[in-house]
Length: 360
Image 1 (cartoon, rainbow, N blue to C red):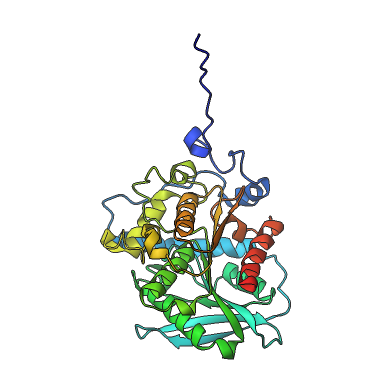
Image 2 (tube, rainbow, N blue to C red):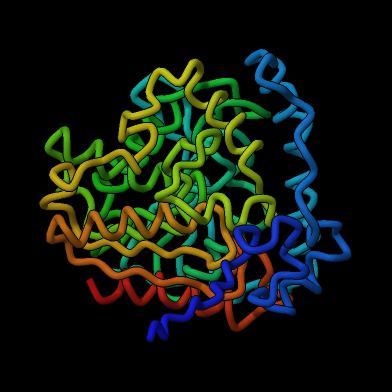
């Protein structure tokens, strides 16, 4: 007698229910939902008023119009926090490899010459918008500096917005220039070990800066790499089946259509769509052999989750010392954006990055 039964599989997120939102997803941290709802960000992300016929100029214009709204959002999320004590900061302006000026924001523990671990921090925004001078990034550098780390934020050129329009490889060149400066000034800065780290688009540039250093024989500059919620596939229009989180979490805080338009702004005409220096997900296992220790941190409810985890698996296959972490219940960069609503989650991510830098 055939006793085979068919099990019911409850697929997560929008794979199981196309109408699911971050507010109705049972996996979502309720503290995060409570923080997002008053801002109108707990439902499905609004469709972008662009089409496949939209020009590059249309995309750049929309990105520039949206940038102040993102900055205002971060100001709201961070404005009520008390200042971080025991931290001092200054700005250094250097010349990049393309002859442009690059502002570096240097944060360190007050009155301590070191040596301390150093973190070159690369901010998010899809390589298209936002600024290292923004409230959330200033706070992140202060929080890390309070954990006995010297942190330098890079004001790289964006592909649109106030710091645009500079497509690939402008941002990568600026991050490489900042890395070279920080490495050359380790003694002056009191930096013992140097970690490259960033989130979202900054996660892309973190991995791309490391890949570029390997190609050019400069891996000695980098002692460790810590990428958070990296935006690295460029595959937001095709949504390949090997990256199911693109379907599962589409529209949770960020959406594939917006990310796809940002791909065009960063890499017009998709000229570098499979170039790992533009989209590191396309790196092969061989490209990663000999890399310094890595951490890949992702968010459970992020469309980008699986591209980060896939990169982690390539690192493991390449024999790189690495670990990954998944911050459960959070949307894209949710562990970094809501310190008031989820202080334990925010502190845990800062602590993990600082501990990684200290223990290299």
